[in-house]
Image (cartoon, rainbow, N blue to C red; front, side, top):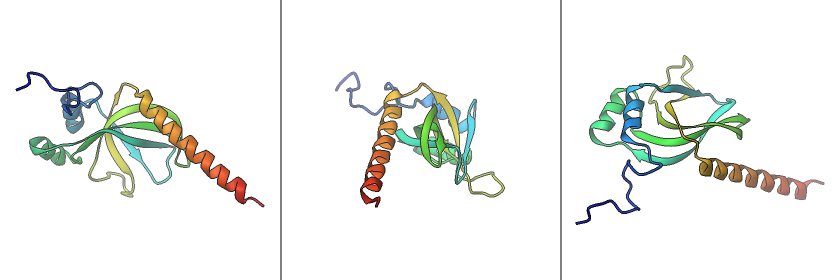
Length: 144
């Protein structure tokens, strides 16, 4: 029997994971921000880091609160036609099951701002840059 968790453990208390306190706040809506994103919005959430599926009583309370049983970390971006340009913050989010928008076509979340994760932001910038360069290169080769 080991009296400590090994470094590869997936416990919520590990550094960087979304802790139980944040999960409880997301479910209860205590100090959260409502985030809504429409088809073409100038703000979008990108990335799912520290993805965690809720189970048991916690999952039931999330469903009773109108939320999905998934919690994860995501970056909120200011976008130009779905292309992330400027990071606006990092959030722990839980998706809402139903949209309270009259049209019903928005993706809605409850979110809590957390510390900026520069590795996640850098990776997303790298992906966007690589995709932009690839598309530009192919367009340059095919241009008459």
